[in-house]
Amino acid sequence: MSDRFRPVSPSHGRVTLALTFGFVLAYRAEQNVAYVLGISPRQLVTLDTFPANALTQVFAPLLHASGDHLVATLVWVVPFGYFLERRRPWQDYVGFVVVAGFLTTTLVPALFVVGGVAPGLGIGGSGVAHALVGREATARLRSLHRWRSLPRVEWGIAAVATVGLGVTLLGLADPPAGTSVVGHATGLVVGVVAGVGERYVSATPDRSAG
Image (tube, rainbow, N blue to C red; front, side, top):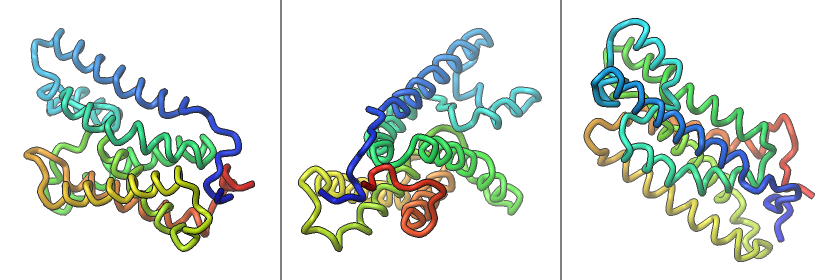
């Protein structure tokens, strides 16, 4: 089995489970607040009054506005979060999710607004999901030159990651109405950069190295 992808101390998906729980809990909180105010969750996250708009910006990576958006996020976050978790230390995973969430929902969309370009509704974990897909696909594709030493499980993950990357790229070409293409594209770029960077720069060694 390839040393690079051997999970020496797996955390059994606990971080991914916590992230999933956080998304679901935040969405439930959205529904409750929207119900009290007598508006829809989507109206809640688009309120343009203080402090509602400030709170939306702070919690943007956790907000989803609709159940469909939440489900679409978790479809990618659960498998690809687990793939990353089995390879890397939890600190790497958490830091990556936090940075990707901030960039895809706050910083980069804000830069587009300053530039006079409407970035779409920049909320939710879909940018993080795209980042996870981009990172895993990049990391796996970099290992294909050692294809003879890869076990079937790793080949399977590489295939899933490659298909996931293709699907997300197609999603950028023909996005659903209201989708923040800026956030999704930023997530993919962040993921690809992180995937490439695993080879050259790492504050901690790959947990699967052994």
